[in-house]
Length: 155
Image (cartoon, rainbow, N blue to C red; front, side, top):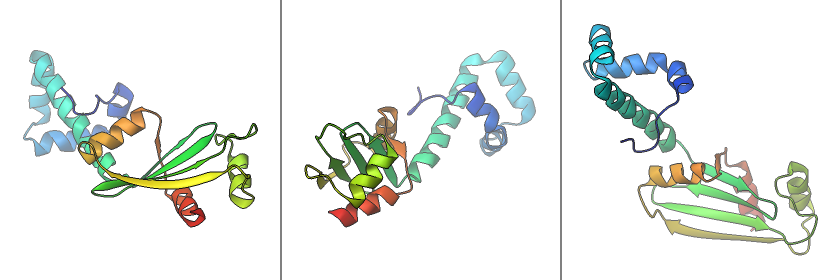
């Protein structure tokens, strides 16, 4: 059972060199891999599960910021080692649509009267990487932190 999810066939194909390196590090030669694939489908699946976890673990360890855009709000998350800092900008007016980059730019330069910006922090409820993975699965995406910095300045 994977910790995150299995890589798709396309993802695996794109990581062929890394997969070969993974097999070598784990003492599996090309000949051994061919035999395992032919004779031990259960072990093949376990090896692919392990490789999938290694790939996701590496990616998630490097994630520093996540964002999610909704109609009436944008949330930015700074993902430190021990805690998450969330900054939210929200508006309740009719024309608010934080999914539109033009609206965000306008709201940052000339904030609407009903604009709220607030921040909160919390420790991770589970392992950092698992929590980040769940956040991505629920709609957040990895970002460069520029929105977070801009929102921090606006606080």
